[in-house]
Amino acid sequence: MSMDALSRTAYTEDHEAFRQTVRRFMQEEIATHAAEWGDAGIVPKAMWPKAGELGLLCPTVPEEYGGLGLDFGYNAIVDEESAYNGRVATGFSLQSDIVVNYLISYGSEEQKREWLPRMVSGEVVTAIAMTEPGTGSDLQGMRTTARKDGNHYVINGSKTYITNGQNADLVLVCVKTDTEIEPQWKGVSIVLVEADREGFSKGRNLDKIGQDEADTSELFFNDVRVPITNCLGEEGKGFIYLMSELPQERLSIAVSAQASAQRAFDDTVEFTRERKAFGKPVLDFQNTRFTLADLKSKLQVGWAHLDWALARHLKKELTPEEGAAAKLWHTEMQWEVMDKCLQLHGGAGYMNEYAIARAWRGARVMRIFGGTNEIMKELIGRKL
Image (cartoon, rainbow, N blue to C red; front, side):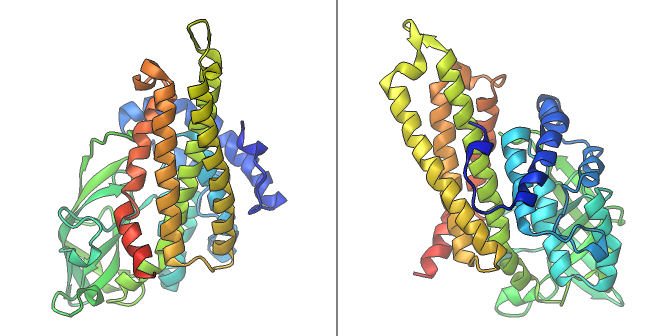
């Protein structure tokens, strides 16, 4: 079953027309290179301008900064088609759904004019550096500092697990500009660091158990000097900025989880229809049909919930705990679908030449990044 067979309520005809452009790009330019890029451990930077030319990057950027001025629904379509038809972690969603919002919402006029047009075109690849060795989801515990020296910051510290880390031309770095203030979150700021700054270096392209094609890096800052004008928004407001953008980030993860789960299910129905055991298709066994029926029911519920969440977000009504709940539910459902679908592939499911094996490995991180699902439960529970 193609996603076209779904009855969606979140999108207009314009959205769906855009989907066709995205789908062709994902099928022709992305999916065909999945194995090659997985072996290389990176998506070539040459793909970014190609995506930018078709309007796939940062569609919400206002026209005055070179964008299309569209709503998040267009981002969601890129996420869905990337997960369903591209099946490659390109890094596009990090730029379009997460990083660009910080610049649109909090950037100075100079920062917006400098970076937004080139993010839209794909000329510039961005990353956001929050996580540090030993801190994980605890952003208040970060140790990377930015000390004032005249009209510059001097940045020291390190970050890890940074998506787009190898390809990045610009990194939004979360730092402590005040290490003494209490509570500690009041000392967090976000500073723009260009990749060619002296003292800034990219470490290993980290070896992961899934999403092999996604470059994920260590970053190091050794007396990196940047102008104070590189501070995003107000100094000391970084933690507030981070918290305010999390509902969209978590909705973006939920969208990708749902679409990739649907693709795994669709592939498995086809596989079990073709594969024979004891003289009949695997799909004809009651266990197979019951397992797939259960998964189909959950996918149906998932699409309805996703449309509800998208509609809420387009009206700017999606709350942080609703975003957390979406990320929690859809990624847990995705993992159940992936695991059961791999099982129905039998021994073939454990072979990387089958798409389900790569999808299963790639899905495991979805319950971790964007805040672990345990943290999601904590955030939802605090509002009970």
